[in-house]
Every structure is written in C-alpha cells, then in structure tokens.
Image (cartoon, rainbow, N blue to C red):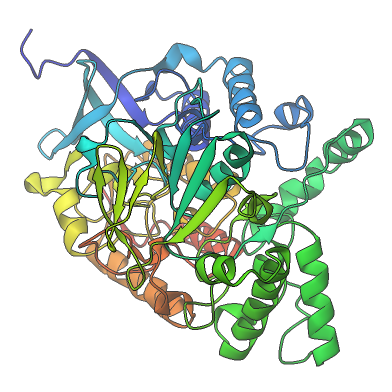
Length: 533
C-alpha cells in the first residue's frame, strides 16, 4: 500500500478524547456523520488522562446518573466520570487510542483532508475537528543541562499514573502556578525534603471542598434544569455571576469589604469572577481586591518576610485576576513545613542557571542537590496543540507558521485559509482560558455540529472563515481585551511564557454568555463571517 493510500474514508475526524472530543463524537454520530476520534494517549479523558499530578450537561440522564463525592472532585474522579460517559454512550468503538495526529493536509481540488497518525493511519475525511485542548502542549527543555541530571524529571502534564516515590527523597518543584500549587500541597508532607523554586508569585484563594452526601446529591440532581438554562449564559460559565446591582462605583467602603469577604469565603473562584466586574478594567478596584487577597495570604503565612516575598504578589507585579487564579487547600501551610525550603528564582533575584548531575545550580553558584525534579512550568496555551501538528490549508499554507507571526481565528471556531477545519479551545474564544471549560467546550462542539448539519442540509461542500470576517472578529476581540487590565500583564493568558509567541490575549474576555449570543447570531444570519460553497 502506498504511503498516502487512505486506510479509511470518513465524514469527520475528531482529534482528542477529552471533554470536547467525546461530546463532539457523540453529537456527530447522532447526526449520522461517519466519524472516528483519534487520541494520542492510551485511554480517554484528555487533560484528566495526561495531568495525573496529585491533588457537563450533555444529557439529563448522564447528569442525574452520576453522583460526585465532593464539591471540587480530583483528577481520579473526573477521569472515572469521563469513562462513565464514554461507556454510557458507547463511544469507544469509534475511538482509536495511541494514535497521535501528526499531519493534516487539505486538498483544494477534492475539498478533502488527509489526516495521518503516529499509528500509521491515513484518513481521507471531509471535516477535521480539533479538540486537542487549550493546555495540552507542555513546555519542555526550558533549562540548560536538563539531560545531565541523573535523577528523575517529571512533567506535571505527563505525570505517571503510578505516581512517584517521594518518601525520604529530595524533591524539587519548579513553578508555583496552579499545577505547582497542587503538587506542593499534596507531596510536601510526604517528601523527605522539598525545595520549591518559586518563579512568578501567584494570588491564590483558599478552596472550600466539602464532601457530598445524600442531601447534596439530591440538591445537585434537582437543579439540572436551572443549571442547564443559567450556567451557559453567565460571564465565566460557572454557577455564579456578577450581580448587576453590585458595582465598585456604587458601593460604600463597608459594602465593598463585605462583598470581598463574602465572595472569598465562598471558597471558590467567586471573588475573581462574581465580585466586582471592575477588577478587570478599573485600577482602583483591581488594587483593592488584589491587596485584600494578598493580605489573606500573608496572614496564613504568618507574615514570614521570606515566604511573603517569594510567594505573594504585590501591586507592582500585577493585579489579582489578570493571571489565572488557582484554588488551593493547604498550600501556604505546606510551605511552612520544616522539610520545605522556598527559593525565589525570579529573574531579578537568583534564577536557575542550569541543571547539573546532582541537582540544580542557581545563578549565585549554589547547587541544590535533588533526587527528583517536578516541572510545573506551563504550556504553549491555546495554539500549542495544533501548532505542533503539520496542518496545511489551501495552497500548502502552514498553520504553525501563520500562528508564529500572528495569532488569529474567527470566533475561535475556524481559521481563514483552512476550509472545513473546525476548532475548539483555540485562541480568541473564552475556552482558550477564561471559562468553565466543560460549559464552553460543550457550546463550541454544539455550534460545530449544527454548522455541519446546516452545510449538509444546504448542499454546501465547504465552510471557511472569510478574510473580512476574521478581521472583524480579531478587531472586536482586541478592542474588548484592550479595555481590560489583563493585556497589561505578562502571563500565559497573553502568550508571554512562550519565547517568540505573538502577544495577544488568548481568551475572549467579553464573557461566556456574550460569546454564545454572538455565535448564535452568526448562525442565525447564515454565517456571514464564513464562505460557504
């Protein structure tokens, strides 16, 4: 068989067996599209398969047929839930595991995509639907000499299912973002000694995670209809939202303090995404909420000057909520354990110089001896999953090359020059960062399914964003983002953590409900931002 001879002919290929991919497969099968899902991993669950470090409303029957053990369930339980969904909907028969998509080339003459995988598949397909995830392309080899270290190096994004042995071991953790925090609070008490290499300090919120019993399960199952009709229209896709009667400008100092206290004590992301909307664009509000959260952190650190300096952001660093806000449970207490050392390795302090055989050498010449190093060093967010694949559109144009010059999409659903390539969790949609991902990914896959059905019903062969439509969306996205304080901060939200990546707010910040409405308007108007033929 020739290298490019198709092994299978399909209506649609779906890439990625996480929340979006599984739901997309379910919908397309239901609509009669001959579909196959390809997954790089050995099993399903996407993020919850790969990210095993410690620490959806598709259907009413699915919703009511599952009971969660706690308010914020951990990775193992979420992975079990996704297995439950896949088995309940009999999805596995159309999923191929250990088959990473390596290339996707569009043939303009035939209006077909040729998809190749690491398992040797050559698929001839009409549509290519990317559900590769917003945080699925880990950053590697960021430090000189990583190959010289004789101990074990583990990426949080590729954490071994069996875990790692840390008892009586010298463990180093690089990074104090969301994943680093979860690793530290879980492994520090079990480690022989842990050294935390703190790069960028992060505002964090203490999580309240009560266990759920029969009463909570009954209440959860009973609010299906309320959740179905309200959550998709909130600002962030969570079950809380801004109170239109509560703004920074119309509140007294006492009222502001009470809102901050009440939303913080909720033990969720409410203080970030449902306290005062002005924290995103008004400096006074941002400074006040930032200082409130920092004050709560300093108090839990017993105002230890070294820990406060290394771990707690200041107003000179950035404002609360302009980075992703991690929830934590015991993180700040773990940093104070006698077997834990925290070293600030900010660029202006004592940064990591290189890895050596027995550990990590700092700029001042000190060598921290380690047995294991855990890298919680982030991702090439939003664009990384597709940029690491050889995706070629009309006339051989390369998606990776285009995104290296300018990060552009149309509503985070398609890209000009790439007919019948439909996307989730890519830049310029809320699902790229600022959203309850299950809510946003469900909405995007539903829009994609309806668009494909409309194409079939209208006898159209391809759907491609127009240049004008893309320009219009990029301008709207940028105008919305640039009105906020988020664009003034260097973070992965802006692509700043990836050398050479074009600077643009990755996530649409206009709100989940607003984005959904704009997507519906696009469809209702007959897809004016797209070319259909």
